[in-house]
Image 1 (tube, rainbow, N blue to C red):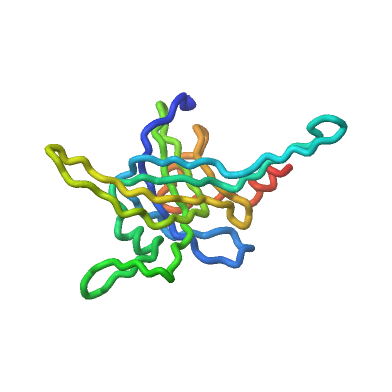
Image 2 (tube, rainbow, N blue to C red):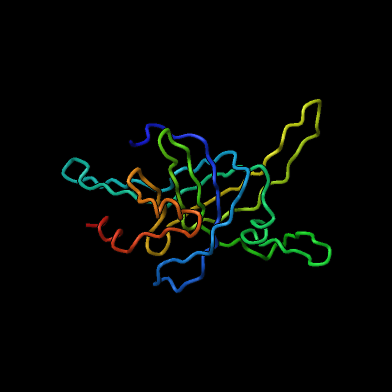
Amino acid sequence: MPNKVKYNLKNVHYALRTPGDGEAPPAFETPVPIPGAVSLSLASQGNTTIFYADGMAYFTTSSNNGYQGDLVIALIPDSFAKDVLKEVEDTTAKTLSEYSNVQPVEFALLFEFDGDTKAIRHVLYNCKATRPAVNGQTSTENIEPQTDSLSLTATPLPNYLVKTRTTDSTPKETYDNWYKTVFVPEERTLEAAKA
């Protein structure tokens, strides 16, 4: 049975991209959990261009420039701060420091939404995150947890791949291994899409 609805963001992971020469298929390290997902809001990026001729819209094209938005989590894990945001750990004092001359690295973002039948799993392949703002407030009678917000940009890979998600027909092996290795479709998938 196909899903009728989706709800409840969960199982957020990141996987560092392995540097390549742009010709080889993308490769990724093992996904690492980001616990405490609160919300994910990503707006699609791209433009529609209309060419007018003969008094009408003669040709229309649209671009897919990926997504941009925010991931809100309970607390950024130290692993993400070190691996992606490139904060540096002092081996003696066990502190994490930011440096202005260090750039965050690209990573894949994996996540899923519950469905009424089966969770829908997603992967965005070429993400960058900006460092979060520092904020907080004093406690009153009730303790309300504060959250961290990461601004994300997900752009196409050199082979134009942006995102993949599971369907109700996804084989069990692919579905069950979603968070063990980053799924990358075969190149023929892109060729079929252009046909």
